[in-house]
Amino acid sequence: MKSYNITTLDDFIIKRQKDYPEAKGEFSRLLHHIGTAAKMVGSKIRKAGLADILGRAGNINVQGEDQQKLDIYADEVFTSALLSSGECCGVASEENQNIITFTHEFALKGKYIVCMDPLDGSSNIDVNVSVGTIFSIYRRISEKGSVVTDEDFLQKGTDQVAAGYIIYGSSTMLVYTTGNGVNGFTLDPSLGEFCLSHTDLKMPASGSLYSVNEGNYIKFPDGVKKYIKYCQERDPSTSRPYVSRYIGSLVSDFHRNLLKGGIYMYPSSEIYPRGKLRLVYECNPMALIAEQSGGKASDGYNRIMEIKPDSLHQKTPYFVGSVEMVNRVEEFIRLNG
Ligand code: AHG
Ligand code: MN
Ligand code: MN
Image 1: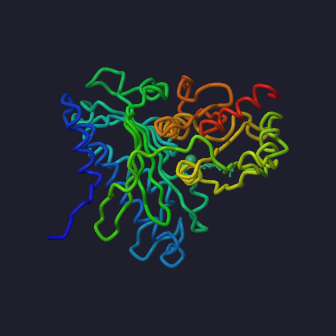
Image 2: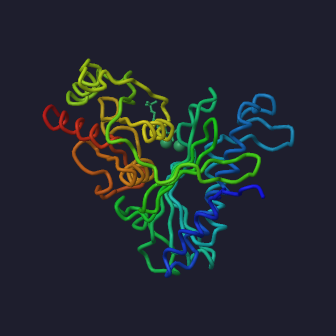
């Protein structure tokens, strides 16, 4: 008999659910729907270059439908998948100024809210470079049965129940954590299933990669400038000079650094006084994954997940990756500002 040793995402979710006797399957259903939305978005992204043949954004395609921007498409697919799960009562997304509240009777009974960046790194789409989706799941704090409010979405990152990302790269991968380690699943296109490929991922404590948009260098704070120079200096007792790698898509840069060891930085600068990345749906979810894999996430001074958000689209300077590298950049910032 041929051996069968595939663990699909759904198998894995069910196995994990059995570890929590009180779990009723609600969370599993939510994750299952996120996985399905990821397959739909992934398949659309694979056809992205064909937009030129079938009609550009704003044009009418051969089916007579309006071509949508992929960010909007991804936003709609994930939002409707979350609604269909029946377990989610509201969504905050990069693509919408305000929260989306689900008012259907079944959804009001849902326990969870989701914050997401439906398509991260979307400026890379036109040049065929990897993009991603980021999601973060919280338990609602408003009363079950009522309509969710902004307060449900402005919880600290430490309150996250789960977080994950999907990377649409040379293969499509879904990586997530429920606060009990990090696991990665690779989509097998022939089976149409996410299969467990990276069990209990651990980010190396140090690495030799640094990722930052160096075009902004002269506008960075002194501490960050000095740290970048430190990364470039030769030191035979360590792996310095480090290698510079910057894709410009947080998901892809983070994913590489998670596997290889490295640091990703989006500091404050004169152009972006609070950095560019959004705390609620970009920084916090990646921070939970970083910490769960042994890494660290900071705004230069504070643990990212302990910052209480004031608004949905709030930005923060961001340093995430291998723990020793994030500790080192914090030292430089503390000493030099
Ligand atoms: P998004 O496509 O969701 O707006 O996010 C893009 C973000 C992030 O993914 C990336 O690391 C950063 O913007 C790149 O910014 P710069 O082009 O300023 O380096
Ligand atoms: Mn983004
Ligand atoms: Mn985005």
